[in-house]
Amino acid sequence: MKRAILAALGFATGFAAPVAAEEIKVGLLLPFSGVYASLGNDIEAGFNLAIEQFGGETDATFEIVREDTEVKPPVALGKAKKLILQDNVDVMAGIVSSGVLGAVRDMVHGAGVPLIVANAGNDEATGADCSPYITRMSFSNGQVNRPMGTWMYDQGIRKVFTLAPDYAAGRQMIDAFAATFTAAGGEIVGQEFTPFQKTQDFGPYLTQAKSSGAEAVFVFYAGGEAISFVKQYDSFGLKSDLPLYGSGFLTSPLYVEAEGPAAEGVITALHYVPTIDTPANKSFAEAFAAATGRVPSEYAVQGYDAARALIEATKAGATDRETLANALRQVSFEGPRGQMSIDPATNNVVQPIYVYETVAGEKGLTQKVLAQLPAEADPTNGCEMAPVSN
Ligand code: PHB
Image 1 (cartoon, helix red, strand yellow):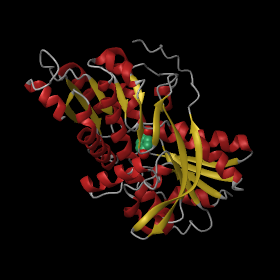
Image 2 (cartoon, protein in one colour; image 1 turned 180 degrees about the vertical axis):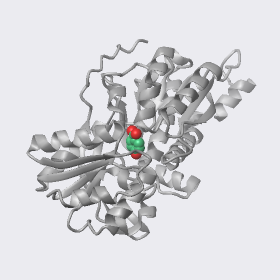
Image 3 (spheres, helix red, strand yellow; image 1 turned 30 degrees about the horizontal axis):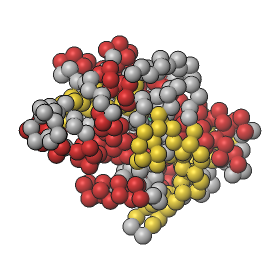
Image 4 (cartoon, protein in one colour; image 1 turned 90 degrees about the horizontal axis):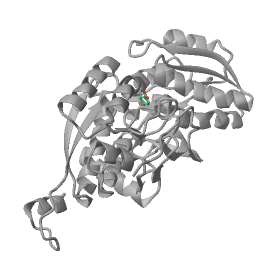
């Protein structure tokens, strides 16, 4: 930011007149309360870290207005409306729940305000409901879960019972897994969707899984629900007879320590693990640990890369809603996950997926990578994207 401040004060050399720093107003829409509150906090920590580290590379400065979406689509819609109409933000970032993303999509598209999605995997937002104003730096629900169906079949597993919360993300993640698992020859022997944000006792569902004839269980749970689920699965004594698999959010480094030994041996897949052995990831992990005292999670990296994308867009000269939307779709940079790029057909990020096992390490639980599956772009899923206009 130093360059921007110097320019504003008239210290820029080589120019006849000082260049005014462009102030970009950013609306950060995240859950700071409810079952996904810790996810929102981690995304914000990653976002702020990137602004701190890379903000000086652009002449733009950033004013951030943060709003709590809770995990309630109607609340989030009200907050998005306030950011767009009252605060007049240039760009929005965040959104954790697929339900929230589905609720704000039409308003974002209609108002023409760019949105950088920093978590919510809702397939439709980069599929049938895609928009040139929505760019996703996180993942899609299909992208994270498709590879696991084939991988588990290849491990010799033939019969699986699935569980997930009953809302868009739970249904899409399980559908994606089930599609590739059954296409490979596997069978889904039972499937339940648990009331989202309301299920405290998973016992009845675990009893069903046990008597289903399954050889393994595949689930999606995140945040507070993941902690309760993993602990209950273990205390039910199921783990040894019926191994637990899932989306990697189940055992996120953000809360795996709260799950404790119950998480050991659980095998999941995700687009980021903090153990990726590259200089870019190591320096990110060190800086994030210095700032927060935590190992970075997928949520942290998503917030970090969302802010990086915004910085890159302003470096390319974008200053307002229209130019930011266009530039965001074209960003590419090397981040902790590797070389980041956006698929122009959908505006979803392209990235590899890691299958990892949660194991005991020297300093607590850690992620042992079992397989790295090649970077994959999503199918267009009905997206008819307007071409990038410059
Ligand atoms: C989602 O609702 O899209 C969602 C929420 C939490 C996660 C992943 C996806 O960890």
